[in-house]
Amino acid sequence: MLHFRVSTILKESFEATLKRPFPAVYQKSWLPTRRRRCCCFSTVSCDARLVSSRLNVLHIASLRTAPCATPARLYCVKTEGAAAESDEHVRKEGSGGEENEKKNAGILPSLEDLLFYTVAEGQEKIPAHKFLTALKATGLRTGDPRLKECMDTLKDTLKKTADGVTLDRHLFKKCVQSNIVLLTQAFRKKFVIPDFQSFTSHIDELYENAKNLSGGQVADYIPQLAKFSPDLWAVSLCTVDGQRHTVGDTKVPFCLQSCVKPLKYAVAVNDHGTQYVHSFIGKEPSGLRFNKLFLNEDDKPHNPMVNAGAIVCTSLLKVKEKAEDIVPKCVFSCTYCSCLISVFLQCFPEGTDMTSVLDLYFQLCSIEVTCESASVMAATLANGGICPITGERVLTPEAVRNTLSLMHSCGMYDFSGQFAFHVGLPAKSGVSGGILLVVPNVMGIVCWSPPLDKLGNSVRGIQFCLDLVELFNFHNYDNLRHFAKKHDPRREGGDQRQHTYGPMDYESLQQELALKAPLWKKVSPTESNQDSLTTVVYRMDKVGE
Image 1 (spheres, helix red, strand yellow):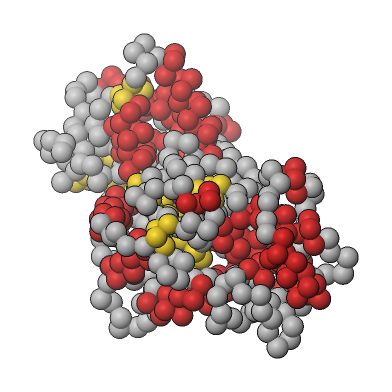
Image 2 (cartoon, rainbow, N blue to C red):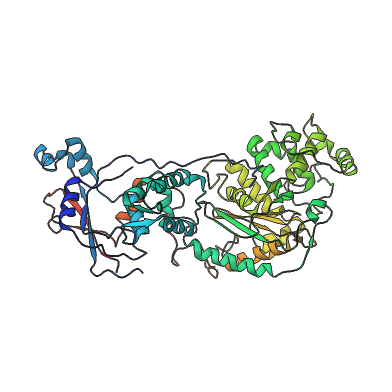
């Protein structure tokens, strides 16, 4: 990967000759326009490390400038055949041979410089809050684990500055260099939702529309759920690139209840494989209430999204600690459990301790989350089992595929068929009022509002999901050919994105940004005042127009 520094000779030359204010640049300009100068840099390695921390799927406890008076020109030279240059030419450059060979090997602006000029907009220094505000607009948060090193360095650096607020270019580069690839992708709108602010403004509108609904009833057969206010309403989303947005009561904790069922099924498949898990559990919708104790013709629970199947699935989990050490011991109905044991004992693996399994089952249903933390869980499913904000693989692709398939066909109680028809996305609801919605390869969304309809689904949550796919082409079959009646937030400026999603290495991203027409074009060495016939020169002009 490439990293660059300004050559000593050219730097001294321009500091001696260019004693004038720098013109401003437009906000949309990415490349530096502050000086008329040649950028000559040498290659060194750049470490763009990602901070990774383990996501426990079952126990998350929570997150214009004025126009230029004259067009600036910037030269970027790349020397071909630099290894063949004579020692005399190297000595003229005024530095060691090895260093000059590196300098001549390839010359492009560094990503750190490009990012500074983008945020600075022609200024010598930038306030730290301006950078953080611009970062938030991309969808990234300062608390993102991937940005921990950057944020820690920024905090320490500001303590050492004179005013404790502003950063010059060199200090800024020091702060961002550890996470420069991720930051560059964010500011260049290379995430799955390029125009994140516009998209979230639509989400806020859909939230307000559903907020006005007043129907439904809070579940009262579980005393803890009956205590929640019917006015609580929250929506949180997390994209596969870690862009996050929340609106409403997103920090209020609530129990996962049935929303935990797809997660523990995914863990079971991850640990044991599909064939073993489904030797105990079926794959078909039951057509019955979710809490009915009923088996299919093969004497198995119909699927892992109903209570019977979820209890059997719980028995397949590899528990390293005793259940009572995870969550305080639950109290459950002796009548229900006696009936369950008598009917379903044949469905469990041999030697299963039914009391421990039931205890763990109810404890998992009682795990508290917030909309913010649960949206990361949903986004992990949307991202094929890799946590978007840590980059760590939590589930196998096989486990995720199977989970989404069953969520799509069985996840919304007796409303599953209707939901698949109208919304066309994998989802799972719970009687606490939560809906875990997955837009594969795009994002995870969690809606929460306690009032439920007669089928046990959140009234506001269902309305939000219907409105979402009415506005955006997220329905599984909205992307059929010749079907383009809805907004696609994955498109930038109305055009389909040409680049791929996901991380890029430093060099590829740098070359794409610096040499992308029409910003840069090749010119002759004489036009660029270069005296070497082996030099390929790229010139950027009319920047800021």
